Length: 169
Image 1 (spheres, rainbow, N blue to C red):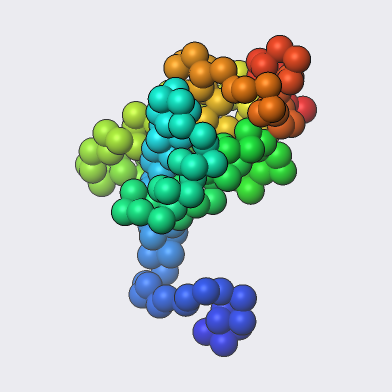
Image 2: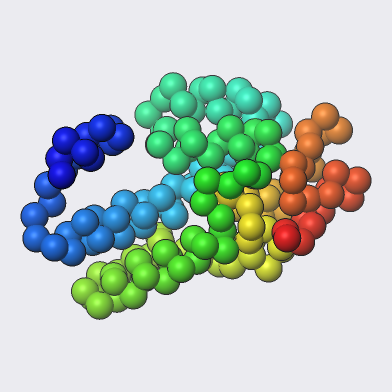
């Protein structure tokens, strides 16, 4: 299978026994959940401080604070556009439930991962479930009272006129 996998993958790993691939995915997605929310926190902190979101993206991407998820989701956060999604918040909930149950079954505390759950839940309750997981930025902007300048659009899933989230279809 290695040649077939190498044809479309960046890197191929042999993780050993059956099931290790799933376990590794849980580890990786735990970090994705955390990094999505951490990226949103950084973007909202910068915006609330009066920094241009494009500059925050550029500087953080070049520095030690970056992550793959910041690099993937922060451009959406800058544009305030989370559609089309690469991973829908509504679907992501299933993954988070599986990861949480896996960690619990091993007796592993996941305080940072657990701290992201209310942010994703708030996104779903705001009607952002069908948007990309980067839309957690909208939740934190709302909590921080960040108002985008007139030039910033809310993208699909929100109402430009009211600046408020709109129910996703």
